[in-house]
Image (tube, rainbow, N blue to C red; front, side, top):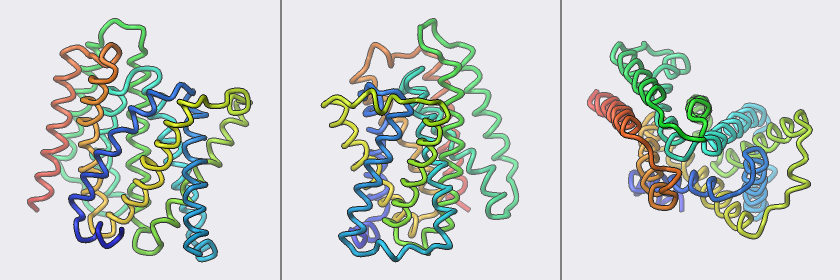
Length: 295
């Protein structure tokens, strides 16, 4: 599999993004609240990856010096998913994924800190345009039972955490096997979500056993859209920069919004201002990538 990814890295990257486009759809289809949903997702993914590692006999080869940082990265991605799915639950898929597309702009501001490079003036301008677009979309929100303000807030926090996670991952990809990285990170996610459940005294995991439908969607979400895609993403990052991965992942909103409109037309239909604002954000994201690619 790794040889195929290396040989067809760009094709693999965009196929991965198409699969990621189903994450929000599955999250919408699962009736569980965000906390138990993320807990089940990460627990099942962790168990799948653990079995893979045992089968490959690599369970004892984890570098203990990198264990804690990777565990921390897993906690970050666990919180990212929590805010992402909460955005979907309180608003809808379209809002959650369009907010997620701001991750490349967070990357533009965070990369200078992580990699000690100069912040570029046009990146600041692009950031201001994106903020203006989000403000316009929020100001012109349609009348609805959905909490759009909270949905945008959760979505933007989710985007920030996703960027932070990707940049941290970029420091480990050339040191450790992709399966090992993802296994530890899934464990970190399970730990942080379990802590939140304990603090909230939330026993919904005990009281609300997933239905057959929910279990089916959870297995799809955990195996294909989590375990497989994360190993896939880390392996791709060995040959493509973290920024290039973030840029490609920004295609996810397009796939997700189209799928959501097709499957959930009633709750996903937005007003004109949303599509204008979304188009501006996506244009800025791709323009940013085009400028960086020319340098």
